[in-house]
Length: 218
Ligand code: BG6
Ligand code: MG
Image 1 (tube, rainbow, N blue to C red):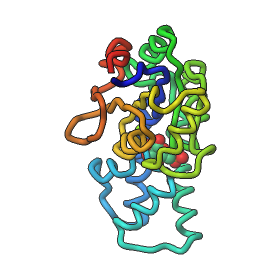
Image 2 (cartoon, rainbow, N blue to C red):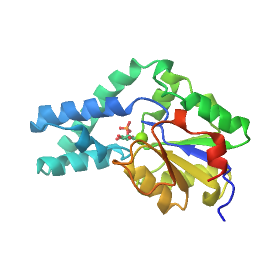
Image 3 (cartoon, rainbow, N blue to C red):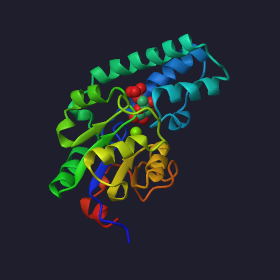
Image 4 (cartoon, helix red, strand yellow):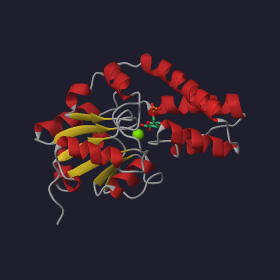
């Protein structure tokens, strides 16, 4: 029988806050401007959860080019600067429906909470949306080196919470994140549509449709 969950580990972009659309818009702009590529929402699925350098590598592969390191870095920075412009305009209204309430309910039930994000912009997003006080720990792209689907970010979050992986549950909107959770020996709740995602323990369209009772019964 599975052990009772004790730690809730949340991805940030697309699970807690509505930033996935801004990553998409910035990559789409870069793909059009530099490669004359039409970057579709379907293409974007592969970019979700994956760190910036890994996303650049996928984009270069899609365009069929190998770039010199200098241009590679310059393009990644360009995309990031566009993304930051969007994030600077964010308000607490862009916390996704049900997210604040669900995390608060978890804490009220005695569960520990952490963020495990690939993003190096995590601190800025938390500052704009005001949700940092809801988490015991934050692990982001500035403190880990291996991109999801490597489990490093989730295992680090579990360690910081002082919990073994098998009592932690990961909440993820990206296939790379769900794969990372499984590789780290954690159960997962997929946030999204069954046609886009696989390999999860539970699935829901958003955190507004998940209850602490469901998690405890996992
Ligand atoms: C993840 C997003 O949370 O962070 C990815 O889902 C993004 O789309 C990754 O590429 C890295 O983010 P950043 O902000 O460091 O470029
Ligand atoms: Mg995400």
